[in-house]
Structure formats: structure tokens, C-alpha cells
Image (cartoon, rainbow, N blue to C red; front, side, top):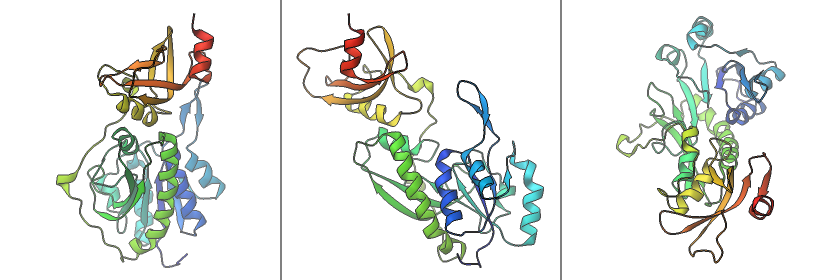
Length: 301
């Protein structure tokens, strides 16, 4: 890697961040520190677990900072910046970066965002692309500013969508493609060969944070196609739920039927548009994953 590049601090917390950090390190970029959130309680035992980027950074002997508030490490960042220019790369960090911290980096903090900005600013751009039935999504490399996902864009890469992707599949694709795109374009950004271009504010759209409120299927207010997209977009979290044969099920996959089934089962659901959603894969109330036939054989009376 070009030795003229400035030292890089990496901001990231989610599993989505890990491929980018690994790609930077493996390509020889001078990553001198990782800033991530504190360890958090997860799983049934609610044990403290470290972010994946922390585990990897420690394996690579890269210093890790886990401030509860970024203001806690301003003195350390200021000391680094006084020694010479430092660069920042942010991928799914999860905290707001304040202006006093942004000003310490040259040319600023570069953010990898998984959408074709200004489309889908906000916390759930990949889910939004699936929910809306988009035929493409993409990666944007942008310069972070005070407003969420509104900074000027260095460059973008389009990624086609087949209409069959689930959320976990799209997360993996965007994380890996974004990591490679970042390592390819970052030298030109840091050398000033790529200059950021302001976003078109009139074209901006926004996506919201998903929650457990979004779990129910709601066929009375949505079309069958919309619900099939929702099932794929909500896999993992927040999931899509319904009640069948007196059980609360988590739906993993479904198909859209234009004609009513000859003998509808409890897993054939009429929707707002008079089309039918046929649930094909699910998790039963006992936690077992199964296909529709297995569920009906086991629970139909």
C-alpha cells in the first residue's frame, strides 16, 4: 500500500462493518485504531459480547477505543491530529459524529453507505430497497457531515437486484461489495484525486428505523406482493409474524398466487388486492424451522 497515505481510524460496530475493516487491513492500509461501541448484552443469557470489529482488531494488534460518548476520546484524537493529518473511515458505526470530531480529520470522515444516495438516507436502506421492489441498489462513498447521509458523494457503484434476495443475503452482498469498492477508491480519495459532489436534495428519500411494531403480516392493508417483499426484507429482524392454527409463527418465505387455491389451508392468506400469499417456510411456536406441509401435518386437527 502507498506509504504516503495518512494513518486511518476506523469507526464501525455492526457485523456489516467487519468486511470493510478486514479489507483495509489485508490491503495494507495504515489502520492505526478502531473506534466502536462498548460491549453489549446479547442472547438468552444476556452476556456481554464484543463487537466483531473489536475482536478482529485485537487479533491484528490494532488499538481499540470503546467510548460511551465520543467526547470521551476527543483529547486522544486531538493529540493524533496534532502529529499530522489523520483520515477517518466509517462503516455502520451507530453513533452521531459531532462537528468537533469531524474537524480533526483530513479530508474528513469517509462513510460507506449501502444505497445509491440521495435515495434511502437513514438507518434501513437495504430493507427499504427490498420492501419497495427496487431493481437495483448500490454503494455510496461520501464525506460525512452534520446531517444524516447528506454529505457530498465521491463515487458510487450500482448493484442489481433479482427480486429474490433476503435481507441477510443483501447485507452480505453489500458488505462485501462495499468493502472491495472502499479499498479500490480510498487511495484516490485520500490523495485528492476524487472530489466529492453535493447530493441533489430534491431527489432525497428517507427510510426509518424498523421495530417490533413492523412484525405483523397485516394482509388487510397490504398486497400479496408487498407482503412477500416484507418477509424477505424483515428476515433476522424485525421478522414477519402471523397466527396460524392458533400458533404465532415467524414467516421465512412465501409466494404470490394470482388465483385462489382450490383448497385453501391456514397458510394461504387472502390479501388486500384479492391475490393470495402462500406461506412456504416458517418457524413454529416451538422454535423449529419447517416447510408449510410439515407444519400443517403436525398441527392441523
